[in-house]
Length: 200
Image: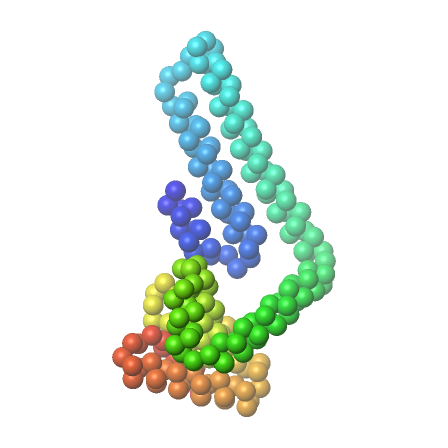
């Protein structure tokens, strides 16, 4: 139960389907363990408990079959991705380009509002939407500006230096200056919210 809770909270894999597969495996294993507890005690499987024993055994077989089916689907998908990587990347790029358009539109709307309006907007949002907004802000700060949050729950590995090096000299310097200004502003506020990873 603890492993499933941690997995659903953190979702450690970068691939969505890998996280889904791991969650399914943990849930089915929990069901199998719960069913298997029935056989711990001495049962009259050939007499009074025969119907229950048969039903529990069928449920265990179904659980095992579900796991094997999930693994087979994952294997087939992995083989397809390995055989046709260009097709997979084309689909992924199309989804990313659509998402980029939405993000740029959303960023334009947010920048047109003052801080009070944005705060009011977030105040009325659900905690899931607030969490998604915080994750996006952390990702932009980490990957593009090299700013790492001091909160342990928000820290993760980054590719900031790789992204900065690929943006070109002028744009890289602009992002580094922005990262430095944000870091200094945060320190002056006394919040200590982010630590700069950017080096000149």
